[in-house]
Amino acid sequence: QVQLVESGGGSAQPGGSLRLSCAASGFTFRDTRMSWVRQAPGKGLEWISGITPGGFGPSYRESVAGRFTISRDNAKNTLYLQMNSLKLEDTAVYYCVKGDGVAPRGQGIQVTVSL
Image 1 (cartoon, helix red, strand yellow):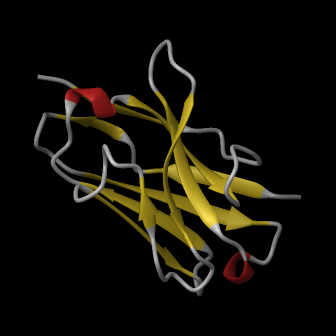
Image 2 (image 1 turned 90 degrees about the horizontal axis):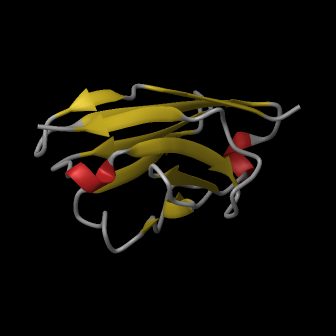
């Protein structure tokens, strides 16, 4: 079955950086579009970035464009999200998602940006 396991979250100060990884299994990763979504405290799921199977033409939510970079290594079945210039409002649980929707997704990983 589909398994998505996020790692690399944690705490950072505003302006800092974190890199998330998502190890995928149970499907043909190299043929599958992947996305990242997040859920801030008290809010719903929010799409933030997507990437094609070949890693071309990444797309971003406006609020993270220019700060976040999505990438993938199809040889390692791994999806990444490099997050730079973090802001307080980036605090959320981050999920990697198979496809463009909100499921199936991993268990999520906490990212906390605080002073």
